Amino acid sequence: MSDRVDIPRKTVYRLSIYQRCLQRLRENGIETVSSDALSRAAGVKSPQLRKDLAYFGNFGTRGLGYNVEMLSGRINQVLGTTRLQPVILIGVGNLGAALLHYGGFNKEGFEITAAFDQDPQRARSVQTKVPIYPMPEMDAFIAAQNVKMAILAVPAVGAQQVVNQLIAAGIQAILNFAPVVLEVPEAVVVNNVDLAVELENLSYFIR
Amino acid sequence: MSDRVDIPRKTVYRLSIYQRCLQRLRENGIETVSSDALSRAAGVKSPQLRKDLAYFGNFGTRGLGYNVEMLSGRINQVLGTTRLQPVILIGVGNLGAALLHYGGFNKEGFEITAAFDQDPQRARSVQTKVPIYPMPEMDAFIAAQNVKMAILAVPAVGAQQVVNQLIAAGIQAILNFAPVVLEVPEAVVVNNVDLAVELENLSYFIR
Image 1 (cartoon, rainbow over the protein chains, first blue to last red):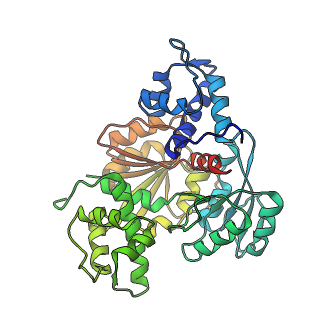
Image 2 (image 1 turned 30 degrees about the horizontal axis):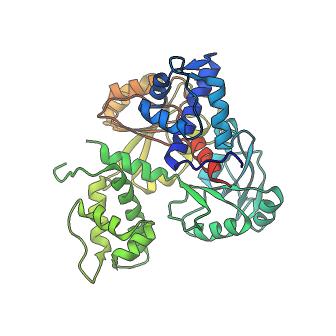
Image 3 (image 1 turned 90 degrees about the vertical axis):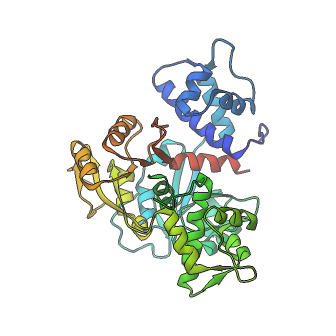
C-alpha cells in the first residue's frame, strides 16, 4: 500500500475501537465529534487519541472536533478493511463450529469463506453454510483464493504443525484460539485469544 | 487471601501461560524444567520469566531448574484456580450459545453454572445442559450462589445496563464479548475479547 504508515500494534487496536465509536455516531446521524467525547467513548485519555490519530495526518479542526465520516473513512483505509477480507477457519470442533455460526465477523468486513477439518463429515450440532473441506485441500485453496488470514481453532496438540502448513501456503496473519504459544517467522502476525487465560486472569482480581 | 501479592496484570497473564506449559510437562512425566526451556515454551525471554516468578518467591535451584509440580501448584494458588470457579453467562445468542457449548472453560477450572437471556425459550441450534433463565432472575441467583464472575455476550446496545445490574448484584469480574467499552467502578475488572477487533488488527499487518 502506498499510504502505509508504521503504526504501533496497540495504536492499531485502539483505531479499531475508535472506528466502532465512529460507526455508532454515524448510525445516530452525528456529523462531528470532539476529541474529548470520542476519547471518552473509546475509554482512552484524550492526549492518547490525538497521538494515535497523528500517525496518519491532522484531522481535528480546533474548536470543531473531528468530521465523523472523514475520520471513519481514513481509519478504514489505514486498517485495510474497506473491502471484504477472506478468512479461513481451521478446526471445526466445538469452538470452531461456534465461530462459524457467529455472525459478528461479517458485519465487520471479514468473511469466513471456507473451513478445514480433519474430519469434515463428523456430526456437528451447529449447522453452517460455510463449506468444510478436508485438511489436505487447504494449501490449494489458500493459493487459489489468495487468502492471507486464518482463524486457528484446533487442539493445542498439532497446532504448530498446522501453522507451519498455513504459513508455507501463504497465510500472513493468524487469529489463534489454540491454547499454545505458536512459533512463526517475523513476517507473520499472530493474535492469541485464549478464553481460559482470560477467565484465569479475571479470577485473580476477584478479592 | 492471606498469601495475596500485588502482581501486575501482564504478569498474571503470563502466569496462566506458564501454567499451561507446566501442565503439558506434567502430562509428559517431566519433573524439572530449566528457566530457559520454560521461557522458550511460553514465548517469553528468560529474565522475564524469572522476574515474573520472583513476585511470589524463589523457586529455581541453580543448575537444576524448577520443580514442575511445585511451581505449578504455587501458580495455581496465586491464580486462585485451585477450586472450581462458578461463572454465569449473560446473553445466549449465537456467540453465547457457542460459549456454552465450548468445553474449554471447565477443563481450566471454570464452570458456567447458569445462563441468562431476555428470551430463555427461543429456539437455539446449539443444545446445552446449562440452564437458561430469564434476566429478572439474575440478581437472586448471583446472591444465592455467591457468583463473582460473569461472561457478557449480549449485543452492544444495552450491554452497559446489564453490566450495571451485574455489578449491583455483586459481580466483580467480567469477560466482555460485547463490542463496546464498558464503564465500571475501579474495584471491578473487565477483560475485553473483541473478535472483530482482533481480525481488524491482523488485517493491518498483512502486507
